[in-house]
Length: 631
Figure 1 (cartoon, rainbow, N blue to C red):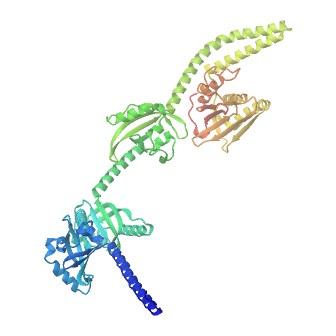
Figure 2 (cartoon, rainbow, N blue to C red):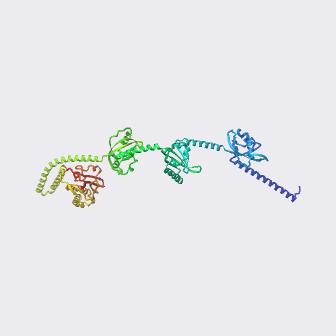
Figure 3 (tube, rainbow, N blue to C red):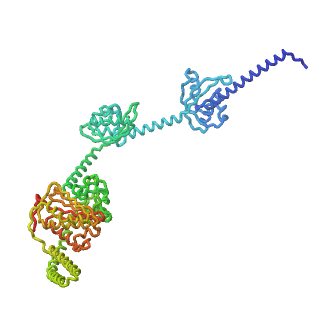
């Protein structure tokens, strides 16, 4: 064995340390190379190295560009395999030119071939490098196929848009800083200019000043508030000085770096003239309808378009906004809807008016009004066919018919009463006399004779009322103040009111009117009505009496009680003989009162609702509205 001294050990340790440093540097170089290789593979552009024209290195991006799946498909192949034949001849010369250039950013356009022989359009940049110590060329290849296709598409779209703008059947313009910077041929033709002439003009030469100010304000407001679209309505001046009306839409856009207005316009002069003609025609229709002395309504497929003043009165409305736009079906009572729809359908096929048909209109306050309707088709009202309906209020006619029927009933009852009363009076006189005689002869049983005498007096009262119906008193009529007449009746009934715990409230207006009539007959009416009101409240309450002179020349007397009211099924029959709600009533009081008021040229109306009391309203002509009375 060799003896190892310290010097030998030191020398061996130094050799080992030097070796380890060399190995460490190699590992660092290897790691750096691998990092470089990774970065090159991650480049979005293709990168290859050519050594004597052969590919000795290719990154992942180039493999994908050529359509290769692995390095063996590319490495050791000559670059000419991947160059399009049209560019092959000049390839070497172009590469040498790029290498000699000081600026490595220069690119040259090329076409390469993929493995599947599809063409790839690229830009090349070449740099001289060393590969394994030998001169080589590094190519950086940028695929511009998508870019070229996009440019071609943009060019195609640009051509399409330009073609569209120049051939669209609408005027198109771009305005910027009070200048027209673009106008298509259609707009120029609308104004009677060439495109070149139009672009030399100021917008003030083409559009009214007011419209330009309005558009400018719209653009500024839109930019401030984020509104980039708004409609256009313009009045323009053509080359020959004539006026043209234009309508369209516009948008705020950026053009050449400045806010601009892109707009499309259509000539609506003819449309405007036609609308004006239709509007004038409609106004003429409305003017005619307005002054026709009949309630008139226009509707389109059941929607109300117009009503005149008289129709508004019938419907009980004061503002057309409450009815315009609503359906006819909302106006007519549901039971008439079927026939109304049938009429609306038939009216479109005929020029003849429909016969008058009775309907019931429902007013906004819920009141039902009897009417009759007749409809006819009206052509070309605002450009369409509509239905004109004439409305006739049947309220007065129905009331007149009721009065006529009542008058006929009164006449028949009067004739009957005249004969019956005459025949009954004589037996009544005899009965009354014998009853008094028997009462004196048999004083021990006065109770029965008292009942008999009361019933005979009741029969006599009924006979007297019959005579009043049969033979009205033709007494003298004079102008008499109304207040004393009422006051005398109230004085008579005050005691009865106190006994029944009823308060009589009387309110007079300031006019203190006089009426033309007979005091006794009027007292009879008021006595009858107020007495009925008192008797309707056996548990007490208030009877309110008000007197008011109206502008129609009549004084209105209103008497309201707080009784139980009259059932709905009886309210329309009140006034018929022997129809009464009182236990011992005859039903003749209202009939006689109505006849007296009608003889005074007034009216008596009664309304009631269960548990809400009864209201009697009497109207009489006042002195300044003297009417000739047929007495």
